[in-house]
Length: 82
Image (cartoon, rainbow, N blue to C red; front, side):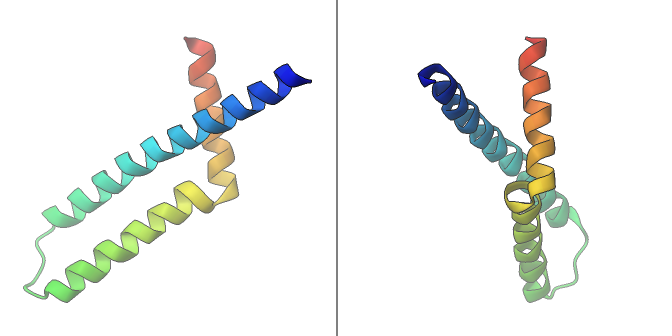
């Protein structure tokens, strides 16, 4: 029982570290892509778009249960390869 609990704790910790890595990578990619677009001089529109994009990526990667389960599956597939 103790060993099963320890494995569950390790898997949970590894999963959240992986979520953090994926979240940081995707947010960096999205915000960089938005920064490279030829925006008009309206700085408020640029800022609002980046804030909305940040929260959309946060929801998709960190909160949405389907995406989280899929990412855990990807993580487990990578772990079994190595």
